[in-house]
Length: 189
Image (tube, rainbow, N blue to C red; front, side):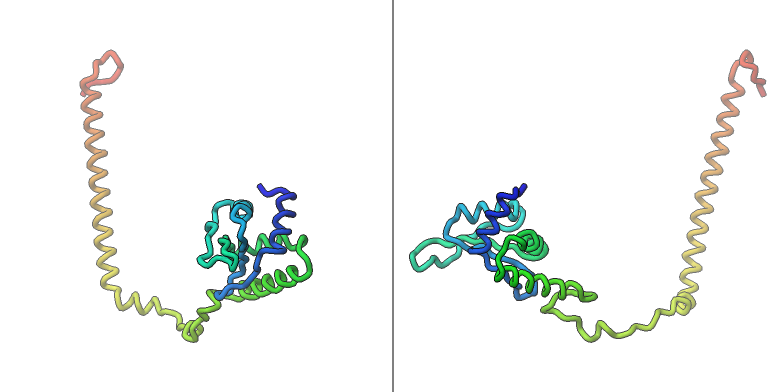
């Protein structure tokens, strides 16, 4: 659980060390990039809770030879954190967050939005004539009638089997009654 104190700490960290961006595919996100591994890991644990990605080591070190650690967060989770930290940010960061959120809202508000890098093909907008099910049934009427006949035969066979089973059960019950002693008040046949 992130406390108010943690939010203020993250806001200060994000103000100086985070890059807010809109990705190539139009997905919003941010990247925390620093040389202090423990700080990056603490921020990652607060922001991601261990559920999104990992802290990574950048392949090229700084000019001073220090290792650079970072993590990324994108999509709706990044937007949620932008909204949460927005009131604590300064003017320049707020403007960047506003622009990213506005772009994200515009992209997700489009009907049938798939992906900005893969627009809908023109063929997807072609009107398709309704299918004539009556004509299809007429063409395949004999097949459906045969299926129906087979189904009726199967059902009738099941009914006959059940009737036979009930009849056998009644006969067995009657035979058991005839062998019962007369003291129970049942007549023998």
